[in-house]
Image (cartoon, rainbow, N blue to C red; front, side, top):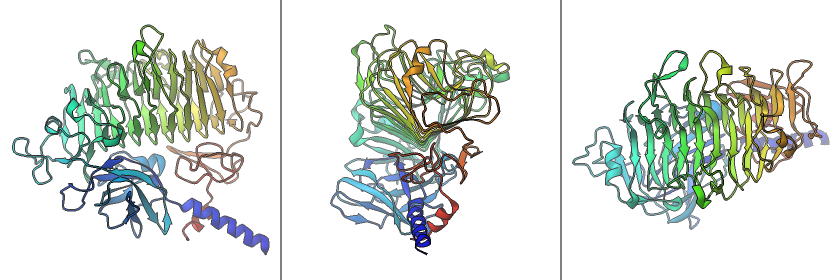
Length: 602
């Protein structure tokens, strides 16, 4: 009887963990507590994304704790729903990829300073997200507004985003774009262009362009959002279509715009800004090529990358088979030249990339013409909780051809079927121009720090059977021999006899730079020639991991050998489930049906 009671106590304790709501990120992290003017809320409208929040609000509550400890619960909530890309929510379908919910609310009148956002679901309190109440103006853009007589208020809105960006002088302002307002067209050079140094903002007073609840505004152009001499810009919940070429037979580019290499991107980052929960793809019938990427930034002339946060965006079908190899799905760099500029590290988190042809999903790479200095992040770059499916080039690429001294922390990512052909003829994958055939690639032409890769799940790679490059779960590339890769608690699941760890033509010296333990190395066939686990993993897991793929999600069977053999400081998996004391290897924690059932009680 004692053992039975003990087991029930353990189940209940773990079940409470399973049911705890988790907040991941918000679009705004600061703004005023008054001035919205819509007759519903008081201050800026904030959207938060998380898991275990419930598909409707029901009896759940949201509260704001102000800087003096005051708890505010009489808050206007605009919606509380699955983050499925359907109105009244934003366009990014993070429910499909991450099982996320989203909710939008107005900051109540409260004391200025640093406060926090939290929710209570079924009597269980979530973690908190920070929010600072500060001074700032709030403006509105509506399809029935008037650029001549409007003043940007809710009752007298402007008609266009361009008018708002021209008129606003206040750093730290918030612009809400209503309706399904469409800005730009396929021939527009820059659909939304922010170039006003008088409105320069930063981390403490970010300048936001956000979709109003029950609105999914559209931006179309050769480039979507661009900026110059500015900073701290937040772009949230827009549908962005960006291309510079027509798409011909077999996905080949044709009729490209003049000088496409400079201005072909959907959203350009800004220093201390945020790119949050946007949905990005090509213009219908067109294709992005040249250089840059769907989300792009560097510090070549103006710092656009320090402290940038790229969170919860859905990028899909970006580029085509013929997209040039210098156009990437996302691309952050520094390129500071000879001054060796140090920038604050950026972050990619909770993004959903799928079916992209542009080379490399989450891509950071640096070089300059002299090959000597290109600057460096001055802290750890974090790449976490992203889901990447059917990706041209590597799912994640980390590389530099000049010194980067920082570390990288890469965890809780799911990458399925990456390492596919990019910049190819649409017929033969082996025509790929400089193919990256690995799920994740580390490119050492100047990486001086440590790359920690842990608790990720990689399921198939190089599935189109290109015969060049590393063709591996982990591919190593570059002429230098400084980077150290720590590879722990990852799952590499090969459905074809492909390498688990391998070098490209000039990366053989990097093979002994990799160490780690407790990884699952599994080939679903028999008698492997290439799919051989590395000898440095003394605690390798070689049995079938018993994971089930239901694209884009992965689940772990209750008899999986991955369960309970990992120790980690991570608190949650990619789906927001709690990491237990003895956790599961890979990006997905096993949570039994019994635990979920018991989790309904508190």
